Length: 287
Image (tube, rainbow, N blue to C red):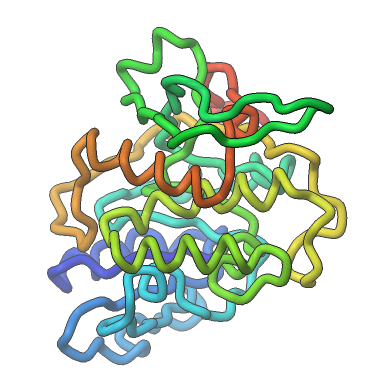
């Protein structure tokens, strides 16, 4: 896998993150998105021949919110793990996550599940099975404690999410029939930068729910007719440390507004977010 992380404010925290994850056999490369004004160090600062994965800096300072979060960067592996710089995962759990993902390559495998609660339907049927949108979507992102009452989850936060590489490359490039919605989403995120981390899961559901429309090679020739439910892994040893990361923590109201707007841009509905049973796959058991 390739790990992609946004560099935290302090280099000592980045150094700790790289040293923790670059020794894992499941990790081929760590890509560090560098949003800071000062120049990034040389890639060779993390070079440890034969014992650590490759490390590459990707400068993103001065770019729009969309381009800085989803730059066009070559990925040499089939999967990409998005991690916040304050999330640390043991090597054994990373290897297990890769095994789980390989069994369902269309699904997002992650560590921070949430539940999308729909408040009223923005669609109505107009005849012949055709639905039209009648108003703005209203959704809420329930926290882990609140969603347990629902017994399921339908959304995976990209603070720790393993996904197929074609999704992360597809959101970065012009993508044929998907381009119109992609441009609208990009313009929205560039004017609402606080929403940049929430757009990717919606993009994945958008592309997956329109299987067969893809025309470019980075998308699979036979995508499913509907998105695969996300897979939550309960990771022993996962820790969220006190690290100053670049991302701003959104209030519930801000995250709900971002999701509602982006869901309308991608023309998604509740049926595009299949729920998974709220029962974790423990990373200490056989998959």
